[in-house]
Image 1 (cartoon, rainbow, N blue to C red):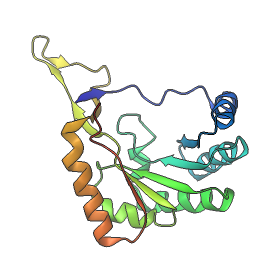
Image 2: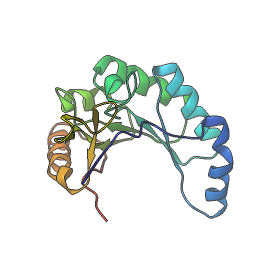
Image 3: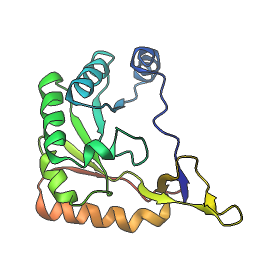
Image 4: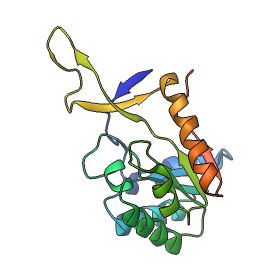
Length: 178
């Protein structure tokens, strides 16, 4: 189990095509994960992923610690619905929506994302770690994403709740350890 706040590091959409091509030549399916601030950004990025040969695109609506992205967007059902609708109208590859457990009603958000070809449940759980000797948060932005075996029961609960209410394919994540 770890807590991280690495943000959303990436080489940028215009620099990722070479990496995708290498994986495609090796016969590997590519799932492009994209994030944006609005439907237009998500659609543009998903379109680029399709153009570069991605087999599917995952909409990151769930990062818990980057202001203005992820779970801030993924907690608004109307925004989630408009993003999914826009991306589905833009690309022909499967669209997966990665949802956050850090919302008031995950079922409501899942219903808003139900035009997706699949839901990915869950991303990390918002958490905080304190340095007791310094009496201060360990992470510079205070909050981070808790991952690893400690969140597996949360992930299982989320899959159960969504599956009990919505008939859509679910890709279960969260609680992975190696």
